[in-house]
Image (cartoon, rainbow, N blue to C red; front, top):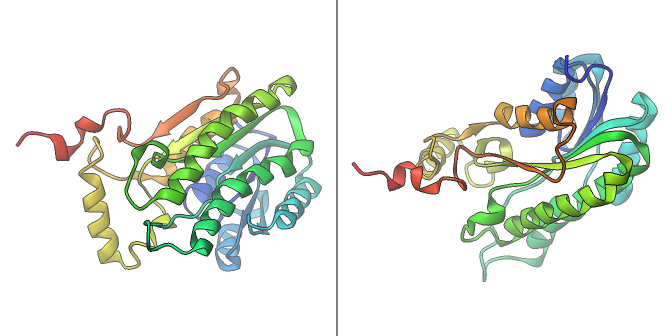
Length: 258
């Protein structure tokens, strides 16, 4: 077991990539505290994953809520070996059609909340701990209508490197996982029914060299590597899990000859 005896704190661990990672971490021997806003999905996660999971209701837009969640995790499990700052929200913000509140909610959750998660956890991290930030291919795609989301993920990409420098004297490694399009609830604002999701997936697949959306479990495997001792000399790195979307875009089906 690659995480035997370790403790982890995962934001947004009640669904999608966060839940898949919590599931994998527990299977690898860790005790895991997860945060989420939805009490029903938190309860479902606890019912599935059992005694080695601690569920904590928290909102990343509320710094006091983050600090309280970290404190409860440390009280239950002791000092932290792993922090996965995973929680985030999606949403389109086209110019001329976006309210300040919608734009600000994305910034506060995806950027400000990530920083204050790390700040809250910092005093409770063991030396040689691992911090993983969750990025996105939107940091470099330039997709129309995604200004706020892309801005937060570009900022997270830069912050990963800054934090890596700050934490290096303690032997704490900071890295980033960068998912592409994956089957998670982040798409629900754009596709609220199964038919809409199937159509969206078909459309997205044309721009992915592997010709399919990814799975949350595939991203979780990359997070596990960064959390484990297998990556003991990996610092300020970005592992992209996107089926080739940003590394080999011209391999996508849309660019292939008939």
